[in-house]
Length: 527
Image (cartoon, rainbow, N blue to C red):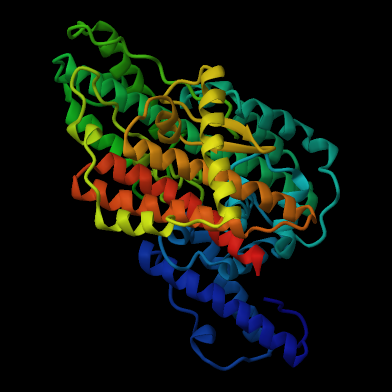
């Protein structure tokens, strides 16, 4: 709040409105984390007072609270409560940017708040492709004001670092590569230049890619661990020596599964030097080494390594990669509702749903070979019974798209456990690991539903992108087709739940969520 001579009444009212928004967030932080200190009497009162000394006391109260609040506490509150609204994020960013003397802690908080704002406000398409600087600047304009056309020259290493993120295949690659340490040094040495609008937009873009890369790599590591645990169990191995991960010498497979599952829960504290990420890395190494030594069971195929291909980028070792200090921030699945891991990976994820357990060739699941029609599937099917000529054409294109994706994945030699990008109708489409598996291995109803939902997503994205470029596009047929596929996948989720096929239900729900988000965007665009 301004603490100079008495401002006009309208400005006083605006300052108090912003201060009260902040006070709600800071009050919640005080309560959740037992930060101590007393409430602010001035902000407890409903009266807007304009005396400079009153405004000074309010400003001092916020300053004391800023000294007590750590960035990981701010992240946890905003990502696990209803307080992480666009309005509150905007107020928090303004509050920290308006400080006269900003230190490293303020930089880390601004890093996190900007990437959180971008993740919350960006359109769904941002999670499917390489997002350009000007697109980021446009989303951040309400916070940063006018941004230059190009990032400043001193931030050129950011572009190179972003390109390197795409080639990473595991968390070990990320932590050993050193890019994040280099970027942290670059930010620390920038001084006040760091807080310029153009610099912040470029840094937030890098942080956004770091966030996406973290989610991708954690999903890949968890998939690899679960695959290895499944194979170990199939070969009769019951424990793994995980002393390298600071666990026991005979950890049970179930205990390791539980640890993997913990990564989908909200992170509760700061982590030291990426230690918790290192634990996940070492667990993967331990189970893969155990699998390499385990005797083969029958004629089952040898396990194949998990590869992550062609995926859009963003780790957060301590510092502030826009995922600040302890803010290795966010979402395999794209927002709007991310969840963060516990073991030290403060990144919003819904990782477990991205890791379907591989089924043994020797003992295929009954659920995967039988299909019992669910009542809701009959409803979905009847909705498609008599499509109009335009919708029929789109439905035909939908099936062609499914075949196109299968061919592209096959030609690129993408492995079933990988994440991949395909280009369809000029649109770069990101496929999650379970979606890739549905095209490469799936032959049941669940795989078909996933395939068609992905194709519907592509068919809807293409006209949406053309409309954004100013072209006149009729979205109705694509929207109707996507709605039909959305209804069918919801029906299949109900079937999977009844069959207690949890992996399928969760994977279907994740893909359904992505399609629903795109439908919502299309609906707004069509109005």
